[in-house]
Image 1: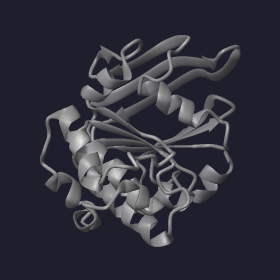
Image 2: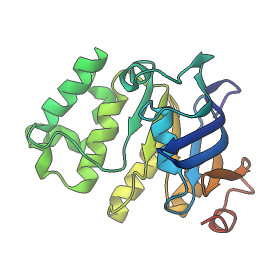
Image 3: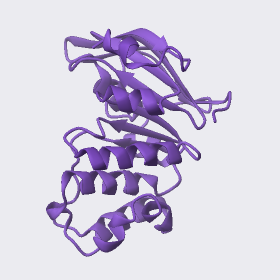
Image 4: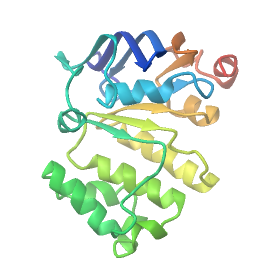
Length: 231
């Protein structure tokens, strides 16, 4: 269930890498408890959008606000402290540290040591606590990255290609987790898996060549055929 309060608003966002402009006048909004997906071909600008929101890239123009606070120009760690957590596509964890130590770092950064909020979604992490993260499977690393981001009770999760390269059973589990997570936090997900996108999303933005070319905001229009035309 969603509310009318927007927890993330992007307006007129323009971003470049050096001389190469990547995003053009992007408008986007995410409400409380809403699952919003961003779809498009590789190179469309989806990851750049998430990285800009998270504070890793400085826009040329435009605004990014959360609860009426402007995020542009703020450090990425300050944005994370404000409750907007970025989970990158690379599935990188601290390989030489155990699962427990990886979570401890997340707890140290947030002051939140309630790991029950993590293991209720990912019970498998309980039995992996003493395993070095470098020996985890791709699915287990993804669980750890999402679990670590949950510490501090974020208001928005920015998740880049969470199911890429994962087994169908893990994808199915993540689908259920995303639905459960949306009861307490909003999700902005970049994802190529259209059946997953259509099953969980309240809104879908389609990107092409750095621009938002469609916004699908009702259940009748959020289907694989509608999304496929933008890929």
